[in-house]
Length: 159
Image (cartoon, rainbow, N blue to C red; front, side, top):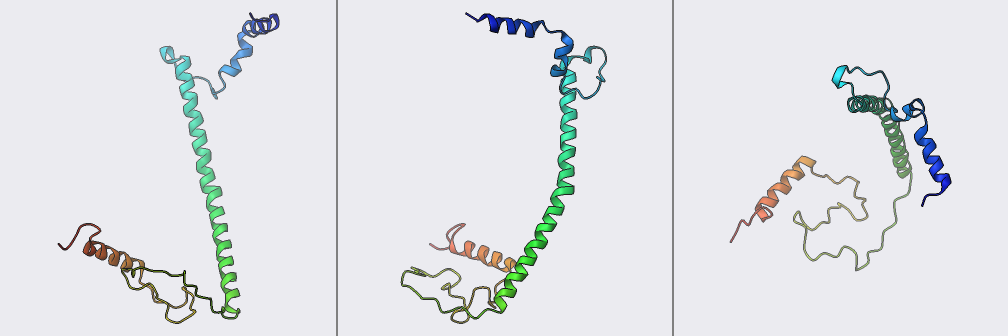
């Protein structure tokens, strides 16, 4: 059933002395056992080795998080700020944008938004980020909560 070569190779692997196989079986053991007596068994030694490995690995990731991630975030933030400033410096010296063509399929609305019609630009051709006085985020959140309670998202107010 088995070839002679496979049987011979398996027999040689089994017949190897214990000292050759020991390093492979104790690959997690980093130090001598601290267990004595009945506690000194393979299960407890391997369990301690796993705990030691976990401690070393968590220490490595803690060091990576502190000494690698934080400097990378700082460098990326500085780069983003530089690019942001270059972008707006470029827009400052550009000519105004040409008027965009309004097509009939754009801005189709069947009803107004609850805060109004949705056209909040102060002048024609204005970019959204130019000078529109927007509510602060807290005022917006409070306005949304008030609207939802009054208009029935959380329950109907009228019959």
